[in-house]
Length: 347
Ligand code: PEP
Ligand code: MG
Image (cartoon, rainbow, N blue to C red; front, top):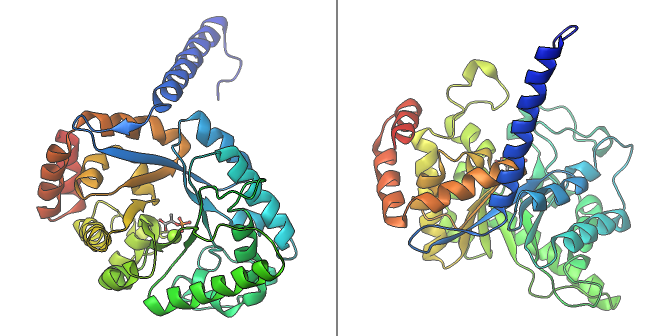
């Protein structure tokens, strides 16, 4: 804050503002084209979206798709869960705005750091280790089924033709959870079929990899789904056993920890061995310093907050896949997050 800025201060600030705006304009223009490495490996660079009104912003910054559409916004700041119709309207509008680009809609991820009074989640000693996300949804068909039907209905356009809406389940820890969720999805499909409502029979279903057990059994999980997306925000806190909201342990909650990067590697190997694609939608995906490592580990898609897209696309264009693989191998051999960061800064 500048109290009573004089003319020269105002001129200086105006010049800085113009330079910032020009930088944003150039970044948005540079973000519009697809990103490939110089040796031709295309990476999908997508946006994380937390509200419907952020979808146009994602497109402005050049998102190739939406890799994480968080649906919690529909459930927050109100006295009861949104109806199927309300949800359908929001998902349909997001799909319309995205056109022929992919839109990954994540099912409700409440609990943990996202309590909702009217859903009666109860008091828990360890909410992050408790009844959250998919664990909650599987036991609450009254909440989950309307959401599944709304997403299915949004998976076709107004003409009934399939669009590129995909469904993603958060906090999956076991193959049994995926099977249970898919069973509920099959029930939702039956209900729509009986009612003569159109949906995409081939809609892709994926899971977030954000619990260490999911990495350990990633080969089994890969048989149940069409794609993985790594949520490094949660994965880091669970791998490092360090609360992502606790400043005292902030040094541990660092996705550049070699332990976390090795989890990313293992999940990518499992996904590709099973012939499915793997992305990342945790914060690490939006850090251009990490781009060489993530490319080198074989990620197919990176999803991030929209303003990070141009810098990450730029990073993708700078390195061949062979160079990225070399950097990833060297980074994963280091033994601290600081060493990894120093190494990547040098590179
Ligand atoms: C994550 O955990 O990395 C993630 C993307 O999900 P959220 O931040 O919404 O928990
Ligand atoms: Mg998460």
